[in-house]
Length: 246
Image 1: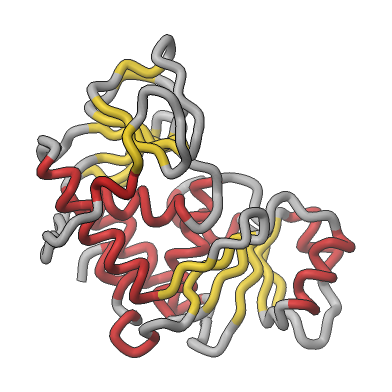
Image 2 (image 1 turned 180 degrees about the vertical axis):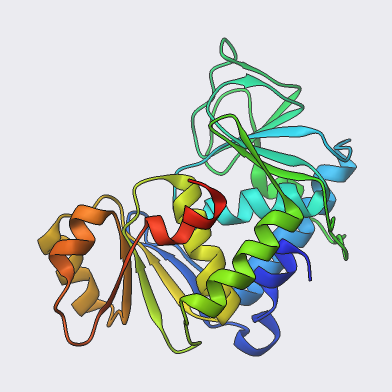
């Protein structure tokens, strides 16, 4: 299986069950909706002229839409560049676009912004059935990660940090790429990810109780203070990306 196929693999059994919930916006993306948006947006990107290896700036905060944007680009054969500026073929943004710092041909936005087309325009009736097995997939902080590297690492993570389809994973990580890996890992197992946004210790505990979380992934200092909960499994965010050399 490819990297994105691993993330989408649970969709046939999980269907309309929630895959990712965004605490900040309240948006919830189901497994079936995730697959539909990714495969159809990938087709839309190709129809707009995206070629294999083309760079696409993804300026989207960690939440329910970031995995959709990144995996749509990757499934289409492009390279998702996690940044807010630079030169690329296209740009996908949440709501921020400054033509003075982003040299791109077209911009697609999840929210209305001057000079950009709605991301929803990429989602039509066509789909991309097969994504790339190898080649560059993501660039984060100047470092490139290949499809085969991400897929292989995801398999190792899944065997080491065992997550079940009934788990509710609270993601309290500090950076988009780490957060994306948490979502990838949880969705591979068919679990539900709750994306928090820089929660405090008390905020994390409240969210965990309200959402009935069974696992939390957080930065070291926060993870250390959460240890001792008899119900909540606590994972240091570094464990999610250490095998990638981060």
